[in-house]
Image 1 (cartoon, rainbow, N blue to C red):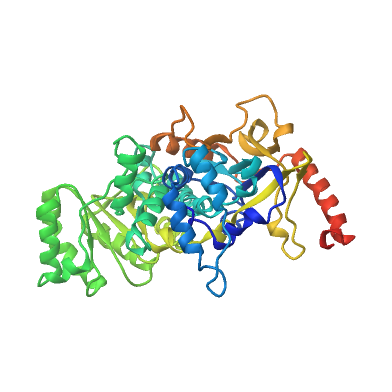
Image 2 (tube, helix red, strand yellow; image 1 turned 180 degrees about the horizontal axis):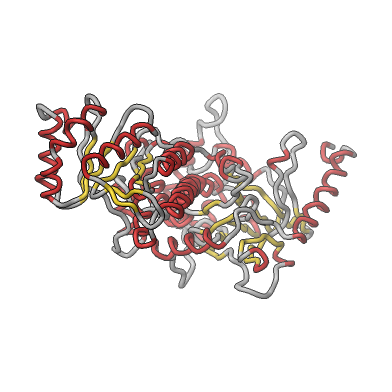
Length: 504
């Protein structure tokens, strides 16, 4: 446990000024890929970090192991400084639990740039440890970013549904984006966290690690995810012909929903020759056949599949004037990104087909092709009470990096009824008394919080659904009083900079 931080943080206990109290907070500094039109983001994953890494008692053996490691970790393989005495003190006096208080927004909360999503408070002799846990706490950037990506994808698909899908089929939206990303992950833990974040917005997944984890660890055994039997290229090429492979699929599982990849050799010929050849068997079995292309232009091959299926099985026109295939659909799982997803659905509607005919599978783009800079998550010190009792709210404002300016103070986050309940940051001393109060709740307080229970996954899903539907795409996430305080602190600190006192 002592080593679950960055090397330089082990030395900070000796570098911070003497203090009675220190406060740090986390925020996303900008929206998903700096989108200026829709700045909503999803905060998710704090439960996992708290339960698996923070809320674990340290032992003397942990410190002994850390000491053995640090003995040769400094330059030249010399001893590296680390707070051994403080570690041993809270092991002896606090049952080994790390001596800070952590507040966080509820899982699945919709937030905006600069919304404080968590806050850390350290006091007395432990004040210099206020940012020691920054490294593991910041790892919430990953599930938060995946959750945001998935929700933005759902929003895009929902737009196509609104235009082209009858109300009685709106439920199919839940399965329109499937998680194909397990194999794209660097480890099983990543697949569980990212896959769980995807499941906040959709029900379809092939990432079994996440489906099992969410159902049995986060949702009291209640199922949250589904998939369907499907072929892969290895199955298709194991037969002498694709027709034989597809017939085996239909005879075995064809009374339900099944998917068949159809580009092992020639996608166009497979649609023209194999699909008509198995049509009667498919109709006799009575289920739904999902056609999957896996190469070629990702928009063109979807349209090819729709038209071929329409030619063989027919379609009906719904109340919105779009064609709905009879017992057949298409899933595109090759090269799908948030950008190409929109292209696929735009082209589908332009061709006269309802969005319910098409699903997408997202793999690497969902669980792997993103990073901390996608939403620029950061933790910064925001207030310190020195040993003499004086308190100083502080902020970062690099001259060459205005996008990295932070907020000064200790914060509360409250719903703003003037912005449909969107979260707004205040200094705790300025927070309104009305409404539901501070949404930052204590999730760790020098150990487990007595009587606290985490929301089940169903409730987290509901929170995200409700807030995303209600909150505006953009909001003023920092209160006027906090902005004024930020300006005052900035002006005061800037004066020290310009006069040279900050460098003296």
